[in-house]
Structure formats: structure tokens, C-alpha cells
Length: 306
Image (cartoon, rainbow, N blue to C red; front, side):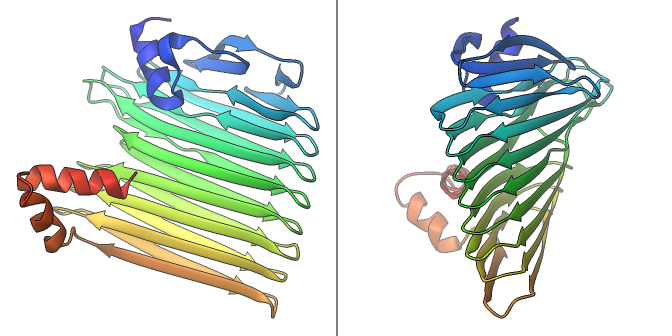
């Protein structure tokens, strides 16, 4: 790996100097380039489509699995199918993410379809970061799809962050929850220029006492556009809370479309949305500390997306 590769891995997967321990699979320009497995985590290349199966043994505790993707080839459209099979009562952290470096004129694109199958009592913390860079006018396009199947008593915490430099993204997250499960999603997005970001959540609360909490925080500047669509279905005694908070500047646009459907008398479904510019009193407070208006705005945005 060269310096560009190492820098991308640091941005999207917190990997210093390209060095990794534990189970991992690094994909570059549509091909796996490095892999390691452990006693409890196996990684197998799919035979029918491009992608891998990640198999975690039951009762595995506190292992960290890295599966980053980097693209440095202009004009490449990469599609990958990764399936995660998490054994009963396992507890693991999975760090994914994709970084695109595009210095040329053709578009570079990565579509990652990640499917999670959690057995009873399993717990997963899933961290996914997206990042784009480069001096070319070719677009950097990322379209992640995450599908989650939670068996009884399992839980998943998903942290999704779009750092910067992504020209277009459609982000789809789907969940099917059985009894006594919990699905927590935290999304952070920043767009600028002419960028477009669209988020779609679709969660089916099928089991008794299933729960989901979806939080989206975003900043839209320039002429960028963001769309937030949340669909939650309470099909049993269940609870959900979804919220969309956005800051807009310049000529940016944010559209939030909440949809909650109660198909059971004991489904308790809540949605909140707040969209607006940075409050003047926040700016004034920071500017009295010696910051310029621009510096004050950046500090507020940084804290908002923290």
C-alpha cells in the first residue's frame, strides 16, 4: 500500500500506518488485498458474487473486526456483498467504511451491501465512515445498504458518518427485529457545494418489546441537498424514537419525511424533526470569546456533529 492508501485507511477505519491486528479484510479497487482470521472470526470469499462472509463463533467476546474499502482508481464502479453471521451471545465491534481518492475526470463509485444476521443474545457495535478526496472533477459516489436481522434478545448499535468529499450518496438501512431486541442508529452527515445525500430507514418491529432509536444529525451548506426518510412499523408491543436534526446554510435544502405506522395497539412510536440555521445567540456567545463569525460557525457545527 502507498501513502494514499494508508491515509484513506486512517480516515475511514482509524488504522494507523496501515497496520492491523485481529481479524480483517482490506479491499482496494474491487479486490481483496489483505486478510487475517482468528480462532473466533473466519472470513471467507464468496463464490457466486463479489464479497465475503464474516463468521463469528458463538460466545466470542470483545473482538474487533476491520473490513475497510478504498478506491483510488478513477472510473471504477465497485459493488460488494458482505454477510455477517454473528453467533449466539457473541459481542464484537465491526469497523467498516469506504474512502475514495479521485484525481481524474471519471466518476468513482462504491456500492456496499452489508447484511447482518445476529443470533440470540448477540451484540454488535458497527462503525461505518465514508470519505472522499482528490483534485479531479470526477465524482465520488457511495451507496451503502445495511440490512439487519435481529433474533430474540440480540442488539446492534450502528454509527454511520459521512466525513466530507462525497458528491452523491443514497444510504439505505433496513431492520427486522424479533422479541426483546434493540437497534440503535446514529447518523452524521455533512454536505457542501452541489452534493446530494439521501437517507432511507425502514425498520420492522415484529417482536414483543423490540425497540429502535434512530438519530440523524446533519449540516447542509452551499447548494447541497439532503433527504431524510424514516419508516418505522410497530407490528407488536414495541417502542421507537426517531429524530432528525439539521443545520442549513447558504442555499442548501433539507427535507425530512417521517412515517410511523402502528399495526399493534401497544406500539409506541415517536418522531421528532428540527431544521434551521445556526441560532444568532450561539454565534454571539462564541464571538464574545474572540472568535470571528466564521470560526464561531465552525465550532458550532463541530459540536453539533460530535
